[in-house]
Image 1 (cartoon, rainbow, N blue to C red):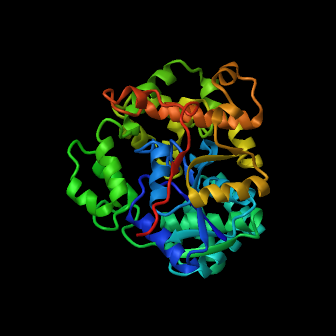
Image 2: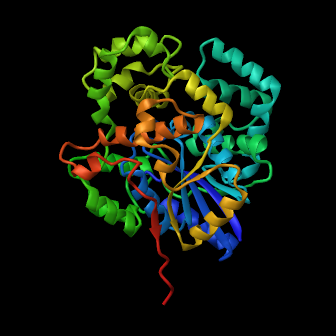
Image 3: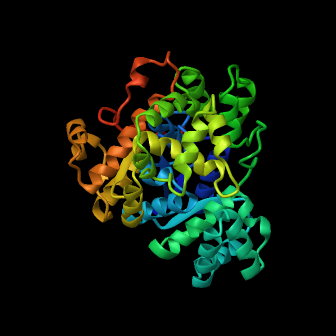
Length: 419
């Protein structure tokens, strides 16, 4: 059986995701199992996922995956480079993944591979560090250096999925040379396009769900039936909005000293003082983030600070995670083929497989705080789950408001035989 890995957010699972999984199955036919590494309660841009991670993983299995694993928070809520490295290293650690499939705006893998090669060249890295020290943003500096060094198209790095694709290729070169990269060109709207339709982007779908009265007729065209049904059942009481974390953020800022703030991951280089100043001038989280954006610090980086600050992620913690990579493979959902795949993972994986969190970490151990590196990484995942509940409406069901990793089991989806 050929095992294909996918790294995704599924926030939420939409028609473009379903298309990618169908394309994988068409290429490898029936002898394929798809394992997805999915961000958990918070996404790469620092947003609370609209649906909880178990529901999103369940929908991914119903949409064509066989197994969904959680990308730990310390990699899920990071830069594109760290997000990609975390996902690739987790897939490599399973010991059975043959191919990594990803989408991109580019129809051709060759320029993406060339970009990955040029970026990792010592002279490129030296030029990049110099540009960053001079105050340039990472994206602008890298685009200029790439264009000068190799003549690659300037717009190659202007598309978010191209950027991620390049980072996957870089991570494969370093951590998983035995995994074959396979590009499936994206179909549908770009990340920044706000219109709905059969192939609407996840950001457009989330934007519609943020409205008091979403256009559910248009949303139905943008979503697989199972996702649409799940969202209708969850709306509005169980749809998370990061905006609801604004007051918890203000409360956190009121209780922290300057040195504590500067120790938080992402709040170095004067950003702590800027955050304090802008928080006193903002009425919403959106205003706060917009007020902190500069040519060097884009909104995505500022947004990621919010969950890290609320969870107390230290700079040292983040640095150590980047060195070790993911320390476990946490199961969120699987089907019957996924169950067979889990047997293979148990035999070959260099990472411990976690199906029940309380076996690796219980709430008492988390409270006492004397944790192993694995437990510390897992503890952040569990706290991120609980932090996301603060992004739910006040009238959310009690079970949703108090959802925890310690009592929630992976979802098993029984395959329905063809008739």
